[in-house]
Image (cartoon, rainbow, N blue to C red):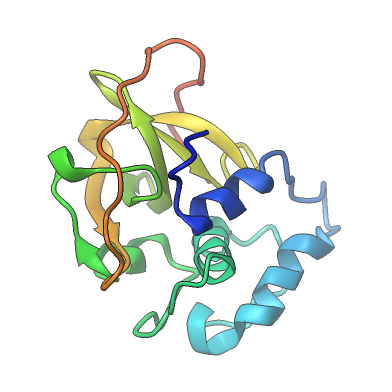
Length: 171
């Protein structure tokens, strides 16, 4: 963990290990994030952690980090994050950048924590039904974003390709 991590990434790191509930039960923590954010940000009434929650996690952490979520209309949808904030070039990535990925049946959104030659290391929700750090192929990344008006502090972080598991489907 870098001492220069933005507040929203610190909030995300504090939630590592949070898991959705098994079966038809729901994790009250995850549902609590949805209640605070509401329909205005999420775009839907979110009432079950079986509904993909990577976008909900990103919205919750950004808000917890003091970021204005203005302009976000469907934050629960991963691909909605591909146009939120400001575009960031791959060589300008810094911890906390919002990365959007293509996946079978939809998308995935998570925070950049580093990279190796072929994969981004991302901290996200709904990765194996939990908040984890995983590796996703760079070729699947469709957008790199940063909150508008917030200075980018930091630079790309080079990491070993060992350690974090490779994710192939974040549903």
